[in-house]
Image (cartoon, rainbow, N blue to C red; front, side, top):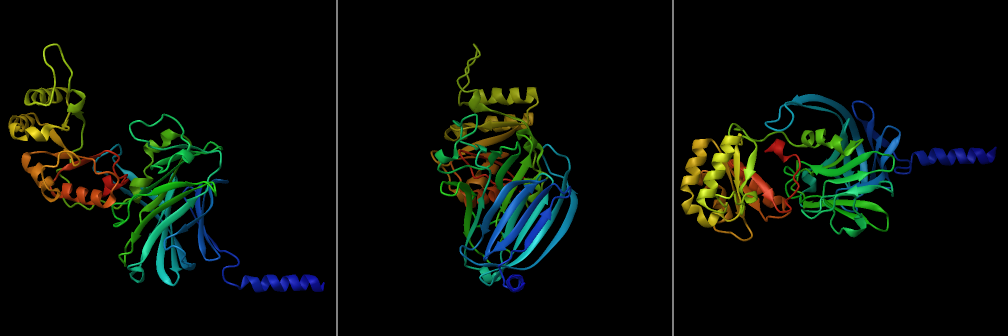
Length: 405
């Protein structure tokens, strides 16, 4: 009897010691099938992702200021059910139906907020920084514990393999990373709204051999009040085809920031690079005025709206006046390639204005690599000069920006 009383007293006392028993903060999707749970254990923040009764991602650590101890101040959950109309794409209307968990946190005494939005087809979470965080180094890291026997698919460039890859053999894993789990479910790990998260580079994923888990990270320096991280995103589906209709990434991205969108006209196009060297028996295509004029006529006859003129044209731009005239006459928009690596003929700050003055409607930007700040600036400059932009050669995977810009 005395022993039982002693145990009871210890349990009661422990219940009042902060951090000994973790509080679980869970937010579910509108249909109740998908859920994300967060808890603080010994000052560290952990999350899990579940679908039905199955844990898709088991308990995994997440942080924003390295080593900072986390305390939950308050939390709330709100539902959003709205719709919006994309300017272009496969959907005329997109429904944005999610439940959002807001966690007010202290990280070593610095206030910040974590937001987690859960949809029927996936979820995303991000941090919102405070003025008190200004100047602090941010390291948005999250571990991802998935079943050991999962199969992985990741972009590997033009020479990639058509099948699952071994993450132990890849130094820098590209996103989106698709994970086929042993129970048959499919998970895609990526991010959204990197465009709005100034200072952050794109998500880096490495396989942790010691812990048999994925380590995800992106870094920046806090700009203070209102500075945000990208959304860390998990898309869910039964098979790969489900992700073709998944709108979570678009719904998480910031709404359109452009006042004038009348000039944006997406469409189908042809690519002169695929014609070069082709001989019809009467004519051989090359990088010259006659070839481009024939391509413009062909595009117009076949109902295309665009012609992408690839590398080499810039060395002959003075002789392309007839090409621009014919394109305007036929209603064909020209996208001109710019090889930043090998064909630099104009400064970056004058490039987009120069293309617009030539009569181009778009720019294909080559060899800028995975550089988020460079990509943000290029997108902004393209919009200011009313040019569509297409990035080439392992570009920054800035998912969701097609909604924002």
